[in-house]
Image (cartoon, rainbow, N blue to C red):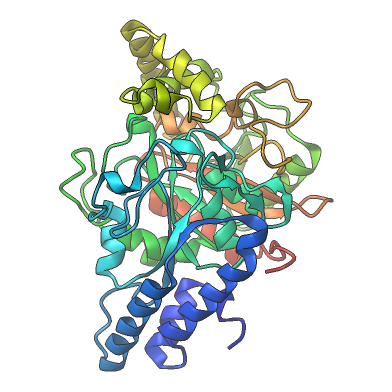
Length: 470
């Protein structure tokens, strides 16, 4: 099958079970696809063809014996190069990380769960240095381009994962999200991504960005994300802040709740004026909201009513960045991305009282959103107010923004509140660039967010959102 790389994880597993598909052939197709796309979009920082084929052959033997290791046995998976992957150095996009300095003999919790379930690891995907910004370029990897137009950004910081999934270089990828980092590139690249409730997916080592940082699935659709969530939500003692295991299956929840019929949906076109939204983006998101209403949701246009928490987010985010680089000497400091150096200097200047004041803002925002979700099941916004801009810059040229948070006002508030939030493809601009709609649920309502997203996919919202070369 020449287009095997284009199959979803759900389709691959069904094909393996029936004997119609082989993990070896699927992995070969994905590796060939990586060879095709890598020169143009630069989605991968490392590819392990030999290791992937060995894992695929082991998977094929398990399927022949009728003893698959788990839910994703034989499915090609990529991992953002922020997360530990046994046997591969995790450079985090930084020239300050020395591969020879450690053994690289440990998996991150989400990676360990995937390994237990028989996943095939094809490689690691690109990230900006230490995942610090909303676009993907770094001193180590260079610039990652958009699947729809490589001259434009893929978004970030999980831009490599988004580009890989969009172009068929593996149906599943693990990303991280501290301020929008799975949702931003998902919107720019036309795929699905979920930032789960904080603690739902265990994380180790702990992020210097603290409880802003989540691990989440990046996939073509919500069904694949639910499958991946059933794997990576498994417990891991190394994360002291993890939640208890989920009560049921995310896959079963996709179809067990009646879609979106009767859901109370709040539609906020601009979060109370926090952003000026491009008219094409606004129109596409409005169509998604209208579709929710057609499918039975009770929609009301209303804002949550909070002030933009960007300054509090900056205090927490920049302080975290400063902590990341604190152990580095002056020689290593000079190797850093210049923008990262700037925010680290700002972060190091904050006092403990500044930090605690930001925590106060965070707690008040969480309280406000808890109250809001007592009246509404979902909040719907644009994922981003714009479509993908020129690659290689932190902010669009000619804009008034100085930092990436200036053009991501819909994403970082929900890292502060730890709520589940997903980006669903909802159309293309006149220039052929993807647009995303964001679905936000109350804390712990991950299954509801996935169910609503799945309902939109089933209703055709994302139909036609595919890269020209996919």
